[in-house]
Image (cartoon, rainbow, N blue to C red; front, side):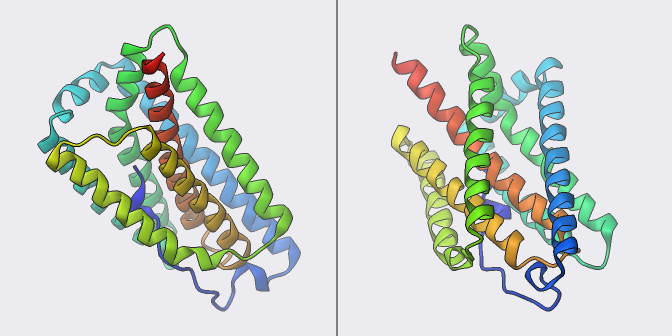
Length: 242
């Protein structure tokens, strides 16, 4: 559910990481993945707090009506756009961190209903843990592929953006007209998220400026969140079919 921070091409600009000395490139990568790790841990902590406080159940009951869920999705997309703009700001480090923090909070809120459902209706299976392990394993493999090959995959940007907005249209269509998005949609969305991981990691290697580590970590976090959502959804669907 992280479409709003994803999309578009990233153009090589003066000062891009690919034009800098190796020591600067390594330092940029370390900062980026350190911030990504912090965002993931903050998301996990906030999600655990929401679930343990009982707020997850309240959000699930409130938001599972189509009207409320659609309003939340629209709000989330707006927040994601604002957060990404703030994170991409090269002038103000404070604004960049505010953007990343805002996006992490928004993800924790929108994830609350599905995490509560997984925890409540599948108590005998560690579904959330399984989805988290699968997500991190897939993310690690995709990241290694880009870092080892060092290929520039920025050409994927426009295609990913078009497919992503098509997926958004399908999600809204399912809410408006009441048709179901089955397991194959989840599989397709996991593939889309994988594409975003490849694309964003490539841009981190080649196109971001070395002062854009916060924006880079936000883009990666958005892709991981999208992947986690649909892996969790897929595991729940497979468990229900047993």
